[in-house]
Length: 188
Ligand code: HEM
Image (cartoon, rainbow, N blue to C red; front, side, top):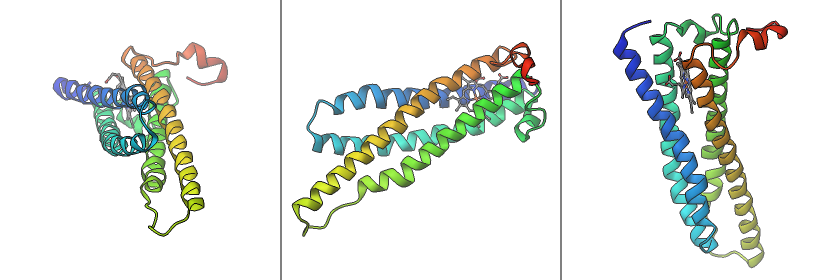
């Protein structure tokens, strides 16, 4: 166990970042997404574009802070060698930490797909001289992209709600996996 206040600040930052990510995802899905369904499609598209721009900024900041404060927490608890894989799979605590980091990595991959692949597709503009068929094709393409973004956002929300469970297990000692549960598999 290292400096008391270092540990308190690390936990504070970790919880603030977690609340930002989880709370933000919930608002996007249950409040913004819901409101979008009751306005005309053209307005819903503009609203989706603007809110997603801002939310992605917030989500990336939260993911960055989760990583930094997570490393600080590991250091405060003197378990930082586990972050390099040292003894990570020797205890229920280590398995839960691994789960937390692996799910964080999935959130980062999903965030990258949204930011660098799907968002640029939504932003592309059409030239003035295009026919009705092209406009229709583009509209179909846009709707497909919007649906893909919705599915990734939903998957992120489920993951973001699961990770704090691993955190709660870590806080209470052995993590989610007790040695008893994993012993038959030769793990933990
Ligand atoms: C690379 C990413 C991450 C690392 C290295 C990390 C590391 C840690 C560590 C070392 C602890 C302290 C466990 C203890 O008290 O013994 C912890 C706790 C916790 N983590 Fe993470 N974590 C990461 C990502 C996340 C994410 C993505 C979430 C949720 C969205 C999250 C939520 C929590 C919660 C709720 C706790 C318990 C409360 C606390 O100690 O702050 N963590 N994490």
